[in-house]
Image 1 (tube, rainbow, N blue to C red):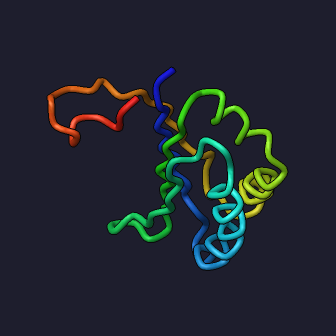
Image 2 (cartoon, helix red, strand yellow):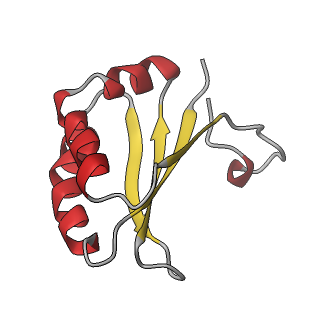
Length: 108
């Protein structure tokens, strides 16, 4: 089974970004310890500092499914109810592996 890339965009309410990052920090740290987590990185949109973007890479769909069942993921549900300005946008991707260079693929 191939790796899964997840891009999750979170639009945070005005004035709550620092609080959101503080709440997300232990979730990120716990996720880094999960089996099958290859990378789990939080970014801030340069053009809209109220927008946070997770870019995640998982070894398999099974690893991602296990991640979604972790107790620390409940913090994201709480965050959605108190700090998000709109519902999150989540995209699940698989690599098309175009080109022969390692830059054209995450690998299998």
